[in-house]
Length: 417
Image (cartoon, rainbow, N blue to C red):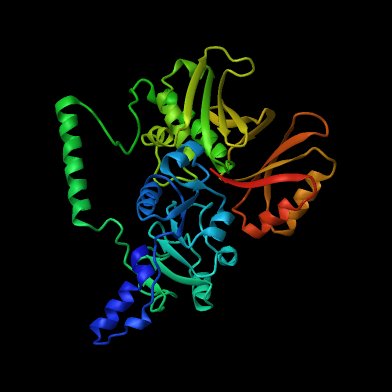
């Protein structure tokens, strides 16, 4: 798609089929020496980077989970998203479609890009604001786009169809004869391995759990999934290490599936199709060090799970327990705060100053957002504090921006569980 876009191959083919010979009309650009910006440098993004380097392109990558060691192994330069926009001649997307990545290329993004950039999306529809892309194509800020995926599929109508600067295909990413054969062979080999040796590979549901352990583990599975999800949704830089501590009753159980579930919750906000089976392998692939410790006693609770995540910039921790069999948060970054997990929550870090709660409540009230519960914690009077607010529905970006402007608010994140 990148090559077709660079050399106007589909347009030139259609013109030639029509009996024209418009050689001078289709003046393309070379890939050699250009800068490719890769948004999402996981499995597929890594392969794309490898091939681009083979074409002698320079590669910059934006991926919060990309560690410096992994970037060095790939031969790419890790950058922030705005720097990628400013430097890239071509931009390719390789992220899942999540709340964090929806519209990652928006109207504001086009204003930060190099004039004449070319954009390729073979990942997920919805990553690009299609209406904003059309405007950027029309005014020349974007020289061209190649799209295999669309916000609404099957895409029978689209604002970008018939645009002279756009190459479109009907979600053909995996449509090759080789891919179909390889999938069939892989399935047959895995079934054969299971029947002959009992080996199970690439399971889609869960790791091995005995019938005896299953009912005991079930409430903890939800707890560790929420703890991992909490940490993953507030993480904005590459993860270097993950430590999970099991204390009290939980330490007596088979914690291997719990660790896998916690990892999948941590990685899911930024990685596509991660589950409890694939999460440990994905963590290893990204050079994320994993450690697990067990203690049979717990000082304050009958049972406790603590997840500590070390990134390139800081170390965060989050702890939880079970209360009447339901997951409950009890600590964030060393600050005690007790709260139940809810479908929609806001997480604040702030300075412990008078009037903050009222200002937050006023801001949410003006936006028509109802507060269900409000939980607070602090490490000392007047110092760092956190707040967890349960709300009745998701927030839009404008409301979040208004909350971030409230005095003494350091950070606001919208969480979903």
